[in-house]
Amino acid sequence: MSYFDLILIFIAIPLLVVVYQIMPKKIRPILLLLASYGFFFYVSKWRIIFLIISSLSIYLTGLYMSKQNNLLEKELEKTKEDKKVIKEKYKKNNKRILLLTLFINIAILFAFKYLRFFTINTNHILDWLNVGYNIKLYKYAAPIGISFYTLQALSYILDVYNKKIEASKNIIEVFLYLSFFPTIMEGPITRFFEVKEYLLSGEKVHYNNFCFGYQRILYGFFKKYVIADRLNIVVKTVFDNYSNYGSFTIFFAAVAYTILLYCEFSGTMDVVIGIGEIFNIKIPENFRQPFFSKNISDFWSRWHISLGHWFKDFIFYPVSLSKPCKKINTSIRSKIKGRLGPLVVGGIALFCVWSLNGLWHGAGWTFIFYGMYHFTLILLGNIFEPIIADKCTKLKINRESKTYIVLRIVKTWFFIFIGELFFRVETLTKGFAMLKRMFSLKGLTHNELLHLGLDLKDYIILFLAIIFIFIIGILKEKNINIREKISEKHIIVRWLAYYCLIFSIIIFGAYGTGYEPVDPIYADF
Image 1 (cartoon, rainbow, N blue to C red):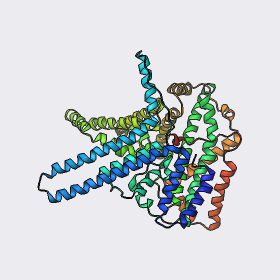
Image 2: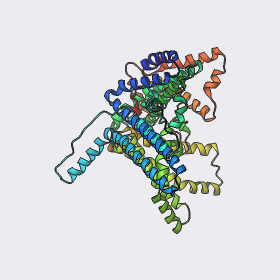
Image 3: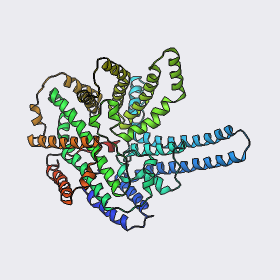
């Protein structure tokens, strides 16, 4: 199942809209919940029970914490005893139930996604030690979107524990938050406070919402069918037979895969956000023109934004503000003045973030390497950025000039292309072999491009489509709302634009004989 399934988008969604419209306002959130559970069951069958367990665990834990907080307030009003002791008692009660809930949700995720990987590597160690015993391997298909909805579940209960949000007493609201079908498979990873006001609103589907929603969906289809599925032929051909190709072709394939990944994932987000818009549920953006990133940190503030925010709030800040890190910072600052203390503490927190970020993307050494690769680049950026800024000031180099900014963007994307190469390969050995071949500077010719499954017409279509996406990105970067601008035009101009988009997908989309569509990449996570 994919969000680009034509039956889902052009039959199931319109039918759901019709039923949604005729239902009473109070019943509409229940209808969305049933539709979400129906979607989940269709894809994952009996594994829906684990989604229910996660939902029920955070709902009941939230209610328990809320009850404990109310009891605490009442006891503080009546008692004359040491209030600090009483607060500590209730905090311990909440912490115990929090840890139990975290354990349940993380254990389910670990069992489905990571147990096999750790078992295989443990067996390698046992073989190396000549123990003569191996742990039995088990493999189960994971529920769709388990990495996404688990992080949402953890964010909900941690926000309740930290009193950033009130625990919801409405079971429909919590269950819908965790299972809303547009976000369940590939995100974005929403926070409860971001979507709470929309989940139970039950507002009717308005004409503008319906039109704007399908506009966004069609834009996602354009990215997927015209660009991603066409590039998939090149990527698959080169990555499956890299030893047959020279440096230029391998680098081209790495660039192609990065664009493919962006168009597939951001295209999916366009569809997801568009579906949410139809039902008046505002889903936060997950991409913000990543092609304009000036460094790796900037890139990760623009790419998969919801995941970055989750790791920042629940890993980076807790680690950097933890007692051990505070002690390290104090110790270093007492001996050495300057930036070393914050850099060391920030480096520790970054290491934790990127270790988990790599593992979140997949249970494999390529993903762990991918995490460590970006950790190293960001850490080096943090170390050298002040030095570079100081040198530029002394040399009177304008860091805000267009030339300097373009050079920074080009440099950033060179490193991104290498990172995505390792993200795509199956093994580290293959990744390093392709990297070595790329830097060998052998076969520096573009002639191979016409023997990768695409002809000249395909490349022209790709070029024009990517230019179109790039122009849209420039307008967004300048905070120009394109859809609003189009909606202000005359009806003939509006529908001309819509039909151009529709027919460009129909005419130039890469489907049919000879084309292999890209699988939903992030659905595997």
